[in-house]
Image 1: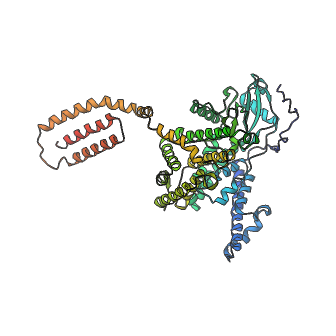
Image 2: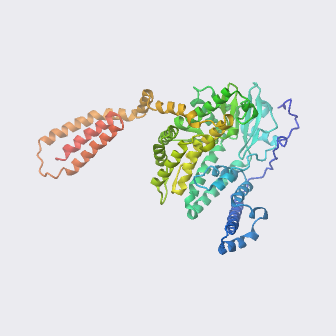
Length: 557
């Protein structure tokens, strides 16, 4: 029998902390979901027409055609929505459509590189305290996923939820071994709803691509579906937590929750409870200044290392997912959504950030432009020139109050739509992490200089890229190719000498017969020189040299 806590009566209900109870329904079929989504889509289109006609009237413009269209739509729309501004209508309809679309709106709120600021600002107000599953049903879900009674595993589970988001619900618990843990459980029907909505969203994205290609709807929706469907599998969050812990094993003051794999599954995650407080809590503000500075420094070290060293970072970072722990230490939670940079993008982003904090506007603009994807009619040169000007302006007032580094990056990325160039979603997730870090730093130490705090960490990381040990490790990545080239090199040399000997005994009949071979040989020599300049393993360009000799000899045959 699972007991309630001494401070929590057994009859406590989820409504106590201000949550509404979730009414569980069987997930709608794809056809019914299609009609529901289509109805709200057309409602949003009509509402946008009414809002546009109203804006035209406020501007003193006649716009008779817009008013005529609005006159047609107005009787068909809900009275509660039709008179609201378009961004508010969008937010409200996403909330009505449910968890999938709330999550979509939260992701779209970050895409200031694609959407108007008025829309992204409104989408930041989407609900983050959704109705909760009743406690009895919650425990049934735990038992179903673990395939055993919760009483066999947990001595106590708090009936009051800690949080309820669009996908999962969390409660505190205690194991029979006395370990304080958090239980995170996927809400019933969410996975099926997400999968069906993903199909409809991808269809919608393909259709919208024909109408508004400038906003890249197909790509944005595909990225959203990929990230969300991964997040609903709690085994991935367990993997992420263990990966982060391994990456930061040499930083004991930066912590990630321990995972109890034996008490976790597809829909249930059991992880360590961090007894800390949020950075904007009264407890954090009451800390001594040196402790607050230490927390800021740990945050800078963690964010910079995630982004620019590991290329594996927390992609859903906000003040609620950061905790100040005794020590002081910094704790990161809610690790279901992560971003990844490949090696090339990670290095480019590191050089970009390094140039920003060092005040090198020209190279910062160059590195940022190099990762942009050029759309039809795109102007990379114009974008680079504009970004360079923004960087110079920031370097003259580099503090959070006037113009923060995250605002600088977001402003630069937002210019992309103007110049018809676009960025990978990881860029936007990176900015979110930086915005969170700056916001927390500003709360703990108003007016702090983010460039100064970051400079020591980014300098150390930048120099580590050129350490002998790292260069040796990078070289060893090509070890199989090096071994293969070493094995084949003697055979190539022998073959080359044999052909050279044969060629010296046979005079050339046509002076132009070997032109093709000469050109190929020259190309091989140039390729070998290029590889050598990029510090390729010597057997590779040595082999190319031998091939060049062979081709040069064969031109006489």
